[in-house]
Amino acid sequence: MSKHIVNLLVLFSSIIALAASTYAGPKRIASLNLCTDELLLSLADPDQIISLTWLAREESLSPFFEPARRYHKNNGRASDVIPLNPDLVFLSEFSPASTLGLLETVGVKSVVIPEPRTIIQLLENIRAMSSAIDQVKKGEKLMSLFSSRLKSITEDKNEQQISALLLSPGIASFGSSAVKIEILKMLNIRVLNQERPSLANRYLSVEELTRSSPDFVIIDKHSSDYPSVSEEILKHPLIQSSLKTIEVEAKDWLCSTHNLLDTIEHINAKIGHTKNRS
Image (tube, rainbow, N blue to C red; front, side, top):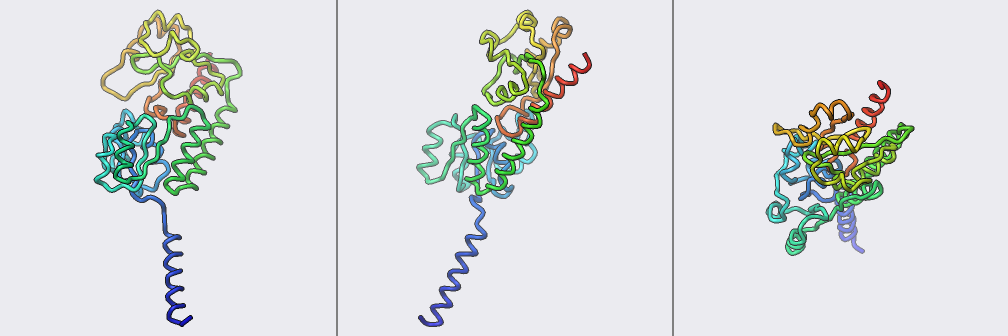
């Protein structure tokens, strides 16, 4: 083999090695769902992201509204991001089949991140996204942090069982997140919405609220100039005198991601503080 060919082979091998060492996974990533927006902002490098939903920019809906405003906004449609030439798009299981179909038709890789029903599935979502965007170390770090925080929070669980009624604006609802209910149960907190279907997913009167006799009412307080029915009901003198309430920002645990632990920790601390005062 001539010296010239050997030199070319060495050069070619060096180029391949350099390319492999500098590859950082997808470089133009879009998200078409608020909860995948939230997870992507936690895992991706800022310059990997090209588009997030308009919801992520809303202060009342997203705890990451400020960094989200740096990126192109979309309305959850494939047609909003295809012109941006993404190399990867994240969707939720609730995204229309036509959205996934259009991305496949034009040859854009997409990954569906399901709504987690358990803590294990929440961790699997972190692993799936971090692997897809070549941020495995970040994913492992996030999963480790979540697990250690969860362990710390649940070690401080209530000795006696506590009952709680979860209110979303206008209705009594435990929402779509089974994960937060799973964690609350680990803290020895019974969720009455789940135990009593008659209390779930509908408007509740003052009488029904007081008759349900929860130890605590946990209200999702939306950041808005327009108060909700459930928030106004809680100002009723009968409610004020008979029920203990804990307010949380709905956006902080709207999505079943690692971020909901902040709200869980807040609730547990409030319960502990109230019990110590009584």
